[in-house]
Amino acid sequence: MDKFNNILNYVKNNITPISETALNDVDALVFSWLSYYHINEKVYKKNTFESIFIKELYNAKYFDSMLFDVYDILSSKKLLSYLAASPRFRDIEIVYYEEVTNKNREKQFSATTFRIDKETYLVAFRGTDHSFVGWKEDLNMSFLKHIPSQVASKKYLDAVMKKYKGRYYIAGHSKGGNLAVYASSFIDDKYKGRIEKIYNFDGPSLNSKLINEESYKTIKDKIKKFVPQSSVMGMCFEKTSKYKIIKSNDIGVLQHNPFSWEIENKKLKVLKNTTFDSKMFKGGINALIDDLSDEELKLFANSIYKVVNATNVNTVEEFLKDFNKNSLIVLKEINKFDGKQRDMMKKVFKIYIEEAFKNILANLNIKMPM
Image 1 (cartoon, helix red, strand yellow):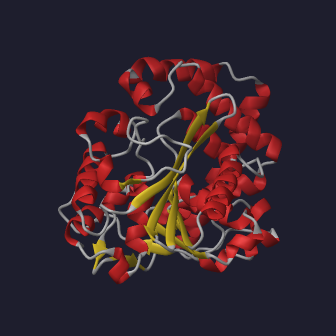
Image 2 (cartoon, one colour):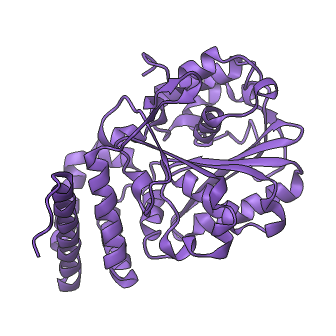
């Protein structure tokens, strides 16, 4: 996927050390993606304040364990080889790495702190991986004020900023972008002045319960949000237009992959508008969140998760390996829904269709009939 200028070309060709040109938006995206890599315990002991250089991650012996559930494995492996060779990235240190998945608590969390120079750090929060636990936690955002990963992100950032003095960039892709904004909002106030920028790359915004809190208002002007033109994940909880739309060379939900994002003159290429499909999703998903009660949203999320759990698989890959069998199991479980679950599903469908219809009429410049 490097036939056009993307982060692979950027890392391969941009050899100027960050210390000479300063960290930019594309650098923050690169570090955000690097946070998805599972660092082997033999390379770096997680949950410690040890340090290793990025170039030390490039070891074929650990590729399988490092990349087993990372999206676009081939591009991710190539990116790692470019990073290990790059004068801009290879000598940047990883100084704190944490990773935890707890199925019972419906928690999937990881974060990595990079020391850019003696006075500059970038904290990257991992987005949703391929585990169904991670996806369930995303669903829980709709009815829980604080999900476990958000609480963990605040604790992580507090610990890092206490340990390492200096200025900070906070970043993340997908759910990681949401965690970057959350952690920056709710850390101790004494640390907030040291945050330079907060990057949310196609991640959900904070829910309405959180954006009205004073702690969020103190950092909102530092947030830089980027979404591709057909954004889905980045439209969740998004009630504003305060984001930059970037050009992706893929289609639909596949645009969530940063390797599809176009870079021009060492910057993310910006477009004027999202696609009609993205606008429809934004209206539909946020109408659901607004119109359903927390109890209904919880019932919806738990019902979906229960259906998937009936397959006894833990990841998307495991589900797809035996797609026909697992799909039949899902359909059988849906048929077992009781009246309350069926009524809730009908309501979800009705709200989404009505919102889609409104958007279609708006796009055609036709007013809704009274």
